[in-house]
Length: 200
Image (tube, rainbow, N blue to C red; front, side, top):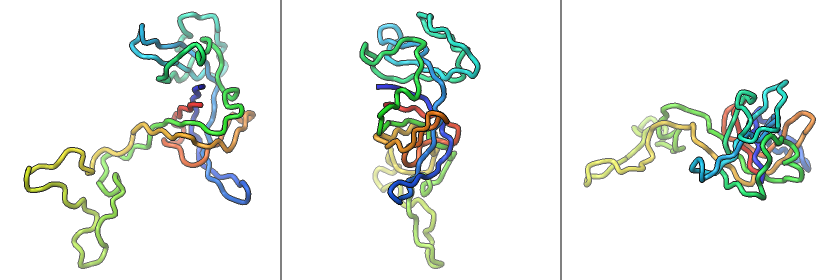
């Protein structure tokens, strides 16, 4: 298994067998393994990956981890690290991990919509739109007589978005190593320029 960070660029489409396929373009920057987290020392197991700043020469002789100041972004992948999937600190990660890969798992943070109503937040249909109707964009019944309260877990208005969303088995449609871009089928959670975690 490999772990890659990517930036979401935008959506476009490709043509395959005379069919339009929507794809999301992801930019793969230059990355290195910064350090590891272990359950014995840190209480959890994870690999720390950093996006290398441009025009920065990295040293690969550090034993306790590379300095964070040499990276623009550092992220942790919470996975079980073993001798089989562990990589040396300072080793580069990138397009070499995508060789022959057809499907990936993507994790990102969805767009924030602030405080939203129940229809937008939970995709309710609402009531009829005719003039005689008095029930349009309303929530509807939310409680009962006994107990005289609203049950927990009701789909109501509230904060919408900024949630961690994972997509599994997403097909890879485009791999352009020269441009540093891959294209995955369909939409990807998050806004433009947001950070996406790719699990291979």
